[in-house]
Length: 293
Image (cartoon, rainbow, N blue to C red; front, side, top):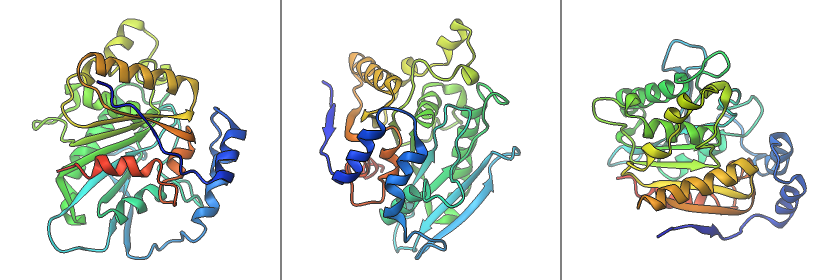
């Protein structure tokens, strides 16, 4: 049976109104203006958080990642979460100078007792399939080899992606060609507002036969880890149809994910809300991350 549900609205009313005014379109700057004031006191260096930026996990200038670690705690190493930005495989960045996003997600993870890894990857049209998928595989290998020195547990890794980042996670999990000798190495996957059936032709190509092989739905049906799939009430039309379609396909195969529709949120506001008092998105995600054993 489907585990679809609508997250209880906790979006501040003035922000919810602003999101509705913007509507179901792609407007990162307009959406960021609604949330940036809530992060006015977020200035580096962040208190009690160690940030190491632009660690190379490959040779391309875009093959870089940031690691965020909170204050050391006694006991076992911490779970690790890799976050992958959106941008249709053609644009996007782990962080823009002067912006609190997506450091907000990293800082929130450290407050939950986890190590945050924020990655960039090679982009189309210069780098096409399977470059970004190979990059995620390389970042996973980097975590497996190096995260212990940052207080992380390489065997307790979750992936969290938004838009194209969600599609990238789905494809990585779905295609064993990207997995190492121990498999994909992931204990849970969080996929927000992805395009799973019809992604970016600039990256995936436009040959229908090849395209079919490169999509993720069939491979995801074999996934045995917890999958969290979501879209928002005011999402881009493609994210709505494809999120619903992926949920149905997995449920029809007897592999229902946790599926949520985030009320009062848009394609971008869901990520910008993480770390604020609006826990409508971060709360359900935390429930999944807490299961990473």
